[in-house]
Amino acid sequence: PQHEGRTTGIGCTGRKVRTDFQYEMVKEAHHNVLNQLVVMEPFVDKHLEEIRATCDGQRTEAWVQKQHKANFTVWIKELQDIPHGDSDEARLASGPSTQITTWQGYDINGYRLHTKEKDKKSAAQNSGVRYEGIDDSTGLTRTYFGQIEDIWELDYGGELQLAIFRCQWVKPKGVLVDEYGLTNVELQSVGYK
Image (cartoon, rainbow, N blue to C red; front, side, top):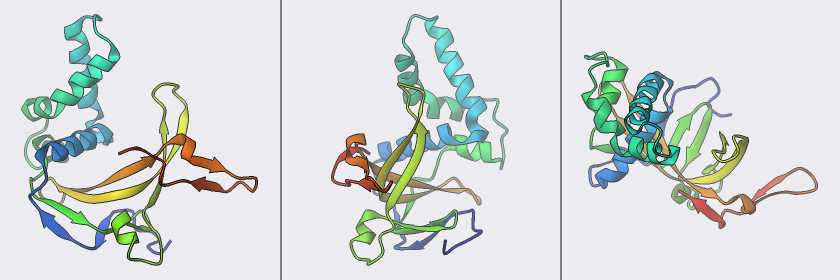
């Protein structure tokens, strides 16, 4: 890797600061940030427990998750259990700035990644991503492949800026392993964003 040893991210090409995003997209990105960070796990668990307690087992887990997604960012902003002041938890609970920094390239974890649009202008292709996650329906680890559509940097104030990679994922049938063990990904077989 070109950027060996660098574990934090930094934008490297195509910086733009924008405020014209639909705020619903920013809210969704913020919700995803809160649900992915280990420091926020106790708050996520507490919110889910509260939702489950109010429905007294009369609702499905899908309903619980839908309520969590719809209400978590407002709930955590009003929560009294969060340390106030300059803590990361307080900044995260308050939400990001409405001003979003976008990048065409980003250096993170020792790698330089580009958006799909930037790759169209380059000889080297760096927009492909691979992610191992747990399949909710089976509980098994599964590998997902896709391309980076957008790179956003959400600003939570102070020194807390978090990179978000919005990806377009390939359907499982678009991923084949050949007789030599090479993985072939059909990028036109779009599944999810």
